[in-house]
Length: 142
Image (tube, rainbow, N blue to C red; front, side):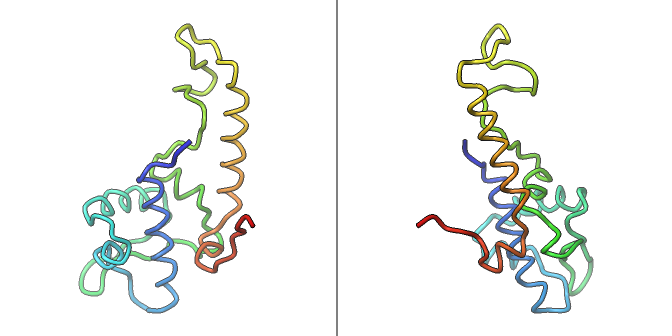
């Protein structure tokens, strides 16, 4: 299973935003995030429109305008960010939940394996907050 650039870039940008929130009293410009994270500004604009619609960020217009987190970094999970940009967190090749991945709608022999993996990924990303990411509180395998 691979997370697309949509989900990965949304998390990178939100982590950048969360890190900058404590530094300044003004909103963070997307152009600044784009430059720091080396992400296309137009792509970030699309992602932040989705994040705003899902209530994860707030926007401010005018001089000093940009974006702020709508909630604190410790109450915003990585799973919420990924879901907000319509990134599915599944490891099966089934198009829709409840339907099989084979031509006749049957499940493949390994369906339960991949479905369980998808559930574990979902649970993990739901357990990690933006504060965990920017605070370096993630475990690394030895």
